[in-house]
Length: 357
Ligand SMILES: C[S@@+](CC[C@H](N)C(=O)[O-])C[C@H]1O[C@@H](n2cnc3c(N)ncnc32)[C@H](O)[C@@H]1O
Picture 1 (cartoon, rainbow, N blue to C red):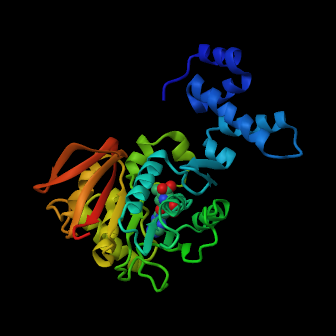
Picture 2 (picture 1 turned 180 degrees about the vertical axis):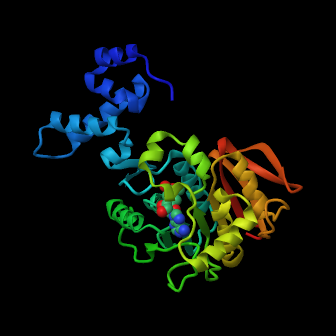
Picture 3 (picture 1 turned 135 degrees about the horizontal axis):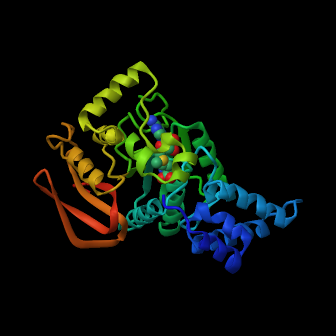
């Protein structure tokens, strides 16, 4: 990371405030430092405390200056029209995730006639941002008669506790509809389940959408390519696929690793196994860039060299960061098959839709 010129610190002090100069090493430029200082001030004005405002602002600035992400310092991140609570130990929701979640909500709300029921499973749910935004957006768009059932799953007890807190913090627009449920389950998606409410290993022909933003960064990229604030403060297990703890699961994980060859792709092998079994109508898997997107499409087609695991019967698309920008005529060929590429930006997700739907 390049060092900052002393003149920049002088400008921050002179043009904004000494606190902006303190924020500069974490924010890296004047505009971000000014914005973050404004958000910290607004947060202090909007929240009550017996401690004087200026002292609280200094304390928050000091925390942020140590490189702690602003979302952990202030405790929240906007996500669509929601305010998602953020705590250390649980990944901060990203804007790219918000973009495809809103697009998914639009697709799910467009069916004519409206479906009598809708079942959604979000694996690796973290803060619960994806199912919460889906619930809010779909509830606003579909008739009240559509029964909506959503499950969020995560291995981390901290994530599940935060997801439940976020559910309480963002009650659905129509809270008194008993046929609308959102429940969170602590669960390792690599282990077989005996919990009748947990979806992964049992046939679930009525799942309309299986969505997952899994850990997908290689240990090497985590060490070299992620921002320092991410490396030092966000949970590694949310970003880098972790080796399973138990012997039995180790054998299963070895099998997935053999299918996909790259350790950072191992969750996709498991997700496709679940998709092959549960046959959800739609599947959305977030990926970390174009190359990974193409590898995952290769896994879906069972492409030689990407492992032998294929999932038939789905139309496959690659979504870029902003999928709502639509089909701009872009196509990519994988394993001799043409795949539609939607939107603009980096490769962000692989989307499957049951062909007969
Ligand atoms: C990239 S984060 C995604 C969080 C959230 N869905 C979002 O988009 O902000 C991945 C999540 O997967 C969870 N996770 C990691 N391994 C898991 C496993 N084996 N089973 C279930 N969840 C897992 C982590 O705890 C983390 O919350």
